[in-house]
Length: 154
Image (cartoon, rainbow, N blue to C red; front, side, top):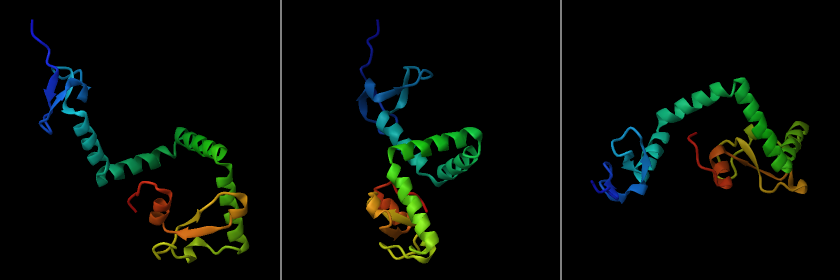
């Protein structure tokens, strides 16, 4: 009777790790992937950061968003966000009305408050009703930084 191994060597990092550090793979002889979980995560991260994958993903999303299911999903997401953050939408509408009335100048005529390039977004520091028209013009990159969002390629 053969004794079962409690560790396995990763073929990528060559580290000896417990079997719990490997994903299942039913097609492998021992039933486990040849890469440890951290190596798999690193490979996925590298793949998703590649320009080729980003382009294919953007094309797929653009195509999918035009389908009936895609539009319905987008509408559900929008409605759920408006329910969770009712003042965000109202603040956005207040800014649109102010632009139409001439109270606030159009964003294309503004420079980013942080870096000086052409602004693309108005940023609300607060969504309280008395602060709806207090906005800061920002470029996309600086807007992402202000929100702490992951930077996207521009």
